[in-house]
Amino acid sequence: MRILHWSIILSASSLSAAFVRSRGVPSSSSSSSTALSHSSSSSSSRTAEMTDIAKARTAISQAIAVGAPAYNRGDVRGCAEVYQETARGMIDSRLDIPASLRDRLKSEVDDGITDTTDYNDKAWALRRVFDSILEYQPPIVPRDSSLATELTMEPFTPAQLGEARNVMDSVMGGVSQGGWIPDAKTFFGETSLRNNGGFASVRWRFPNAQNWSYAKGIYIRGLKHTDPQTHTFRIILKDAMCERVRLANFKAIFSNPENSAEGPLLIPFDAFDKMEQMGRPMQGSPAFNPSTVTEIGIMAIKPSVVGAFQLEFDDWGLYM
Image 1: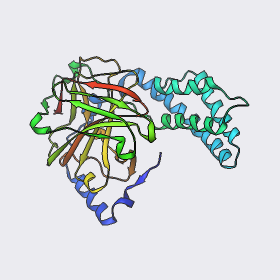
Image 2: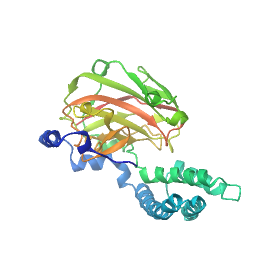
Image 3: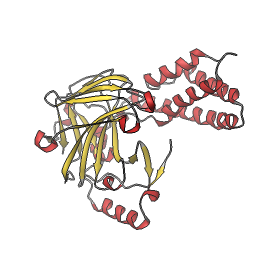
Image 4: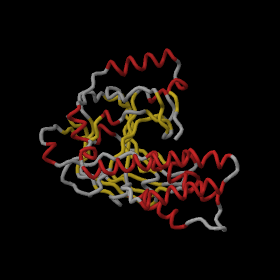
């Protein structure tokens, strides 16, 4: 993944001021709220998954270190074979990686390499799966309802959010579609990989910056969605600093793999720890500032969501 450098976007003086403003806002999140929200970190299955993800990333990094130079020397077949053997080893080792990534990897392994294989296509197909594994982040998932009994929930109101607007990958030439049904609190659509697209989103823009510094984060109650074991979604936030950088925002990944509506999904503000520009992390950028929120949104995006999707919930808002 390409990493953007914050210093390229802002001048040194602006950067210094940005960090002063960011650090000057008291953090309302605590270590206990983070532990409460990131249930994936505390479950043994998630821990095992991330351990195997780390093993997969090590194998992939070693394969790329050999395969990429071979490709650049013109040995495209050699590159494809290195990637193929690495992928086969990961499948044979039964590494616990997300089902969608494992299925894509297994599909390439099962196709194999023969004398009629297009080695360039094969190398790139495997590299795209490898990159998806390298970029994978575990989603935040709902917690047991009993753990949230001491929290205060402040639902968003229609008057507060205003009219929703659709933002699709058409801004990049894509053809994905989506929409929002306000009364049912349902986000639906279809993402498409055509024209290098692959995302659909719905956004709410505030006419005046919202001060949410008194809250710990965002909750979603009664969350259900399509393909629960594969689909993940993103909450998008913008603060005043994002308004200074074209197409910049913060994102946090979430899902409900059990499709259980018992407990709320809690996304702490400290989960929005890296500003992005067009999906690329901006190294050195300030953290999200909850005292100057200008926009919130929900996104479905490749590679976890390709094709039709639907997400619905009972209510959402801030938790304290």
